[in-house]
Image (cartoon, rainbow, N blue to C red; front, side, top):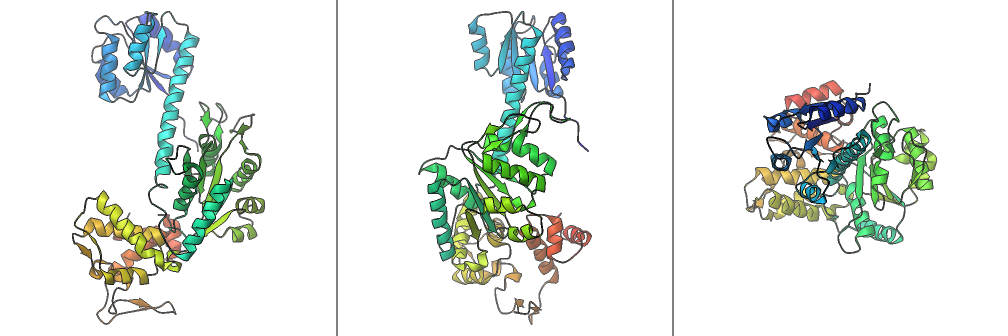
Amino acid sequence: MKTREKKKKVFLVDDDELIIMTLSRQLMKEGYEILSQTTTEKLMENLKSGFPDVILLDINLPDRNGIDILRDIRDSGLPAKVIMLTADDTAETAVRAMKLGAADYLTKPFNIDEVKIVLANVIGNKQLEQEIDYLRKISSKYLETEFIGNSEPLQEIKLKIAKMADAHVSSVLITGESGTGKEVVAKHIHNLMFGGGGPVREPFVGVNCAALPHQLLESELFGHEKGAFTDAKTEKKGLFELAHGGTILLDEIGEMEQHLQTALLRVLEERTVRRIGGKDDIPIDVTVIATTNRNLDEAVGKGQFRTDLFYRLSTFYIHIPPLRERKEDIIPLARYFLSLFVNRYNKRIIKGFAAETEKVLESYAWPGNVRELRNLIERLVVLENVEEVLPSHLPDWMGKNSDKAKKTEAGRFILPDKGISLEELEKDLIIQALEKSNNNKTNAAKLLEMSYDSFRYQMKKFNLD
């Protein structure tokens, strides 16, 4: 069931009751929620409690100047946009208001159509600012780490990436287990394509295709026109449009619905997008990078992924091997993460790893790959206050000495002579399952071959919920 979009709230401040009445009636017809006040008594208090999207503020109020109120609104941190109302048609007043943070101004006498247009533009710009903030947030997790590693597989990947970036290919498919660093590779491709050795100005927009319902994902990717569906009160640019001139990352593309796969194939082939409810094709110039931890070839065979889309995406293809297959990268990554978190948490006391500790790190299988290593190092930095990280600081399940549990080729754990904490082992397996499944509880439960309810019980038991 779709939720009704919240009405935009407009607060009118003018000492002329006729203006208040006229604007209120007309704007309510446009679907706005209206609050109003004809005096400045308790105005700031009412503005804060009303939490409007836009304030229409008269400059010449009888008991206080509107410019001073504008300063108070700015200094209070209220996120509302302010449109000034003035009977002074000179540019000086308008410039003064705009310098103080007003979004726009209207000169009296004004007609209602002009008010509607200015108000719609201000709200549209506010929504765009919010969308940009949102994109920065959802993209930030893709920009956290460097492309670290000197193993032969990684050197081959770097060479491939350099060639693809130099050719400015239009699409790339990156596969690999969860936590191997597919998003980091995507960002590295973007940097090489658009950086040119300097700062990258072109947009890098990332979206997780598995994290959004397919109805919402379609609107996010392609945008929609006003009135395209019940909640489409205004037009909205999609992520493809916002990524124009740069890169869009479609994370976990293997989870995308079939009808969206069809729409994506059209975008890749025609290099245009059409908003939901729209009639016009909008040209786009964007590099599409898709990532997945699924076997897409197998998904194609089962009819779960379009064959033509798979072949279109896999023209330029990169597979990231799991960390256990590139052990030469473990210590460089561990040292990098240690430096990263030592600086982040200001734990200068920690200088590095003991040689024995690095041997344990190298011998461990890392089922959660780079993400598991990163999380482990972060926990060590936060919890330990030592100059050197010793094997004793590592979790027991990592097989740090011969007295601890070891896994045989048959897949059986051998109980050490000194015993082991079963609770500690259970807790860590729950954590590993969550890390390996990107915190998807259903998939984590499957990894441990247990029911979802049992898995949720274990999470509560260990305070992991």
